[in-house]
Image (cartoon, rainbow, N blue to C red; front, side, top):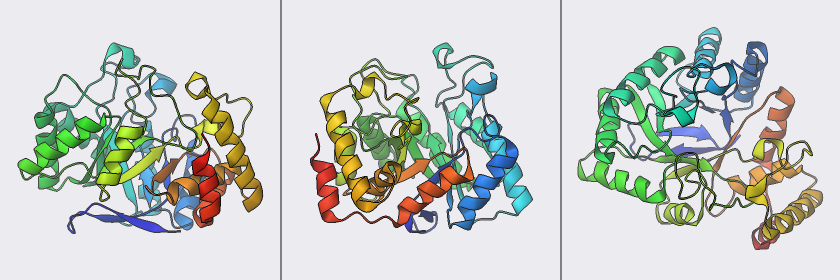
Length: 328
């Protein structure tokens, strides 16, 4: 396994593995025994960066979420997991009422919600301190200053370590970080967005915005990351839920453009040359890129996880990376 640092403050920064494990469906679609086996294998391989959210997975059984955090809490206690494993969670995107979806409204990022949600996450995970806490989605109805101050209070109290943000426009991230800096408060240091080798269209409406897909790492966000190299980007859904390799997982209209076919051809060529799988090439491309991302992978079996773990040791040559980057 390889590792990198998240955070800049010596008091809160952590070393995490360059491959993160997503626990989104653990405790719901992935049963407890299988989930524990996947988690055990990840830690055995040197993995130290696990991702969840307080709303996972409300869409499976009609709750507001929390099953994933609860399962991770049980796993931590049963295995005696200590501070060496960083568990990141998110808040703000729980449906307002049980059994509903995003269309009926979400709890958002008010100071009250942030404090209450963080406390409930700590209880479910069985921890005194959340290692990394994300603002899961944007909330246009709450002033950014209120959200920034609420997160900063949790860090000051010692119940949260690092702060992250997901599914916000780049301008919102920058504005929130500027507000935090001006007030002497900690700002977002980890940015979690959808990113993969194939390029997704960004002009179709997003979940929370008619202006486009705010959760996709598009040009404005990538440019921001180049300008702010201390920020660590995490890529969710890097393998498109099997879309690279499974005929029963079509890519959908967001990838229906000529660049997709050109990139698929380049990907197959590099995979054949390296002897690696297509999925492994995608993950290696993300980990070793000009802007190095931490891929966040899910797994429904230990075998699936092992395929992703092997990508950590796949070193693409400069020539192979040039082939991949040049495809349009």
